[in-house]
Length: 265
Image 1 (cartoon, helix red, strand yellow):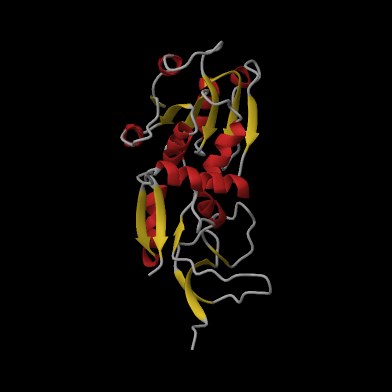
Image 2: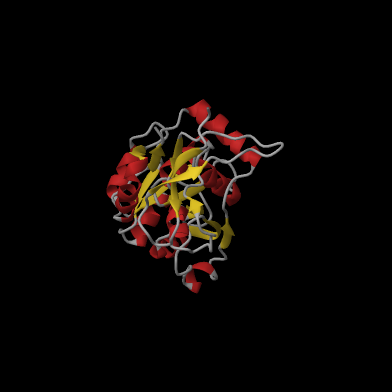
């Protein structure tokens, strides 16, 4: 007899530690397919949902990443609308950013990896499809712009576009400072208290702000083909379901790198 229940990391109350619940296996309705999930990625939006930032109805099961997370960073790079051969900065070299530097490189862009941690920059520099320059966020803006201008040929100093794969408030101001005049900033990160940037770096430079959430179906297929063709590196830390709360705390500590994935045994 087929089982009628399954284990799930179900959020029953906001702001409580993750724990495992026994829930009913859903039944497929007409024209639906029931898919067994064997692994699911942890995303910052899962943390936001746990804090009730989306007014998600309780109870709900965490993770929206059974198919993977790289769709959102790919969609952001596409939405930057930079001509091939142009320059893109990936701000935040974490679960999304370490993929974004490789994807942008394979799409024919000059790539700047930007992060507050030197270890994250060193990691992406070791990949086959590595960025053209590494920008440590703690460095003076003038030093960072010198690095960027050394890899590009443009009428204006700075990057054609920056893609923000972090929600750290300071990253938005830095991205604006490193984006060239008439350039584009693509916002993926969702700061809890909103986005604050100086009018001097946004309005005076005529920077366009673009929001991006996920890629569409056609772009997802393009990404699968790009991954397969270039064999991109994915940095993964695997966790058991019973370790979900430990994973969350590790992520919140800032020690996490790459993607955290829950594997169902």
